[in-house]
Image 1 (cartoon, rainbow, N blue to C red):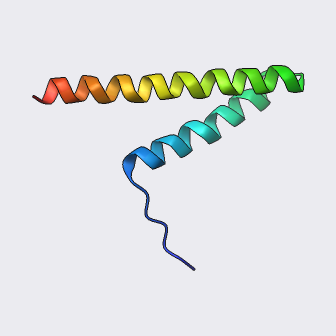
Image 2 (cartoon, helix red, strand yellow; image 1 turned 90 degrees about the horizontal axis):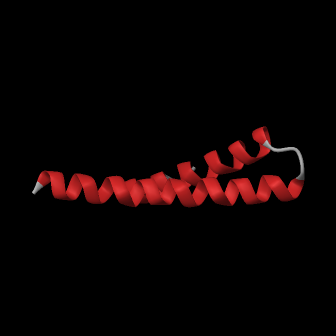
Image 3 (cartoon, helix red, strand yellow; image 1 turned 180 degrees about the horizontal axis):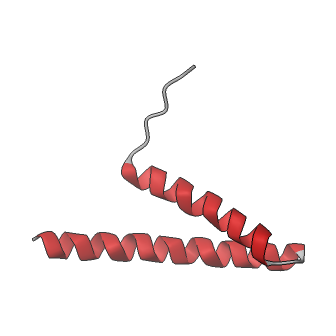
Length: 61
């Protein structure tokens, strides 16, 4: 079995992607609402990822 080597950023993107899918499927009833809510959650995960990254960058300086 091949070894998977992910960076922290790639792992965070995968987490955001799959978590957004689960949130969309679990919380909404129609397919259109699921898709929109999944994309909405994914975008907010990315905003939080970059926002916290910059916060840690400036906090560490």
